[in-house]
Image (tube, rainbow, N blue to C red; front, side):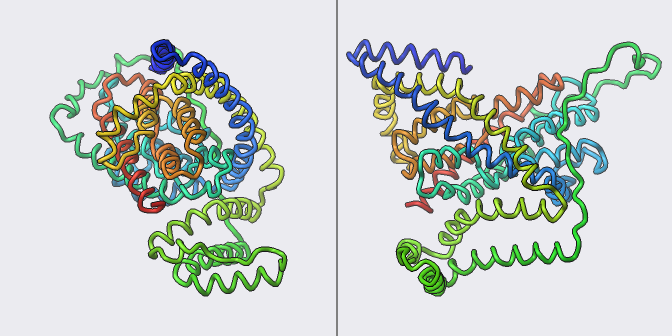
Length: 466
């Protein structure tokens, strides 16, 4: 699909440029965007990815993924009634969801493949997706996102004044998309067209192939998940103090902004007399409790995670500096890996934009989308998102370059980027790993979750950013 999309953009750009006499603009657009892809996006992004991957390695080594998985277990038993609570599939799915919530895609993918393999052992109809498989894929494509790291990284590289402003909108949007995804997948499984066929008769034991009859397929790789150690009383006390401190930093400016402003201004004046006087933004003081709480949550989310993961890891005995460096090494590999994808898609977009294609598309769709409150600038990214993550990254990057990192439409795009998934790709990889050809209602549920994430992202960003 991406092959046709990329080729179509290039050919349409050349056609439009030929008809409108904008060949020079087409050439300049291609060269400018390729330089932007490498020098202004990929290379600066390496530093951010190194920081985040280093922090995430500390979370892995400290066993935080396992703790999160255990917290989700009571919910999982209700969502997957056909899967025994002690079956290996339950553990694999829990670990996959926990890794997704923390942004650990390197750990989430092999765990998801393992979960599908475990679910297949409970499948009496090989080649047909079970209800549990469809529910797992719906959750996977609409996973609640605690921190949309890639979107924040791209905004940071573009020198956004507040790149983390999208944290709270993305969290709310993914919560909405997960709820809708679960509702749709449970609702559709009852439809006649999606009902499971009768299970085939069991094969007699004598006819079953022996273990030596054919070589078994290799098991998918599974990320090593650490069992969290028990914390000593003094370590628990340290964590309690840490949580109380951040709770105070959240509650104080939200409910008592004047007191917070006066106290912080006094402390800064005493410690840094040459700094400008501290003052909360007038817009912040005028907004209600909900908006103030969302803005404060977005502001505190990254500092909280940057401090909590190393602190917890240190309290469990992890050598935080050494492990952070090992995780950060992957940042360079990630940054280099995305360069070809960025160059390809941004060059095509630069050509299409230089030829006037984007302007024409916006003029055609504005009369339809504007009354609905949906910015036409987001349409290309929304249409491509279920198909390709790399193409969406390129389209979002182009949006940043064109509108600026702090434009409300850019923030909507960042929230959509962090709140949706490459649904077609995920279904192809996960179902393909267990040779499932009849996917039933999994795709419909995943696309419904994506659509909800898009609508929620636009609505929440309008509410928060005006």
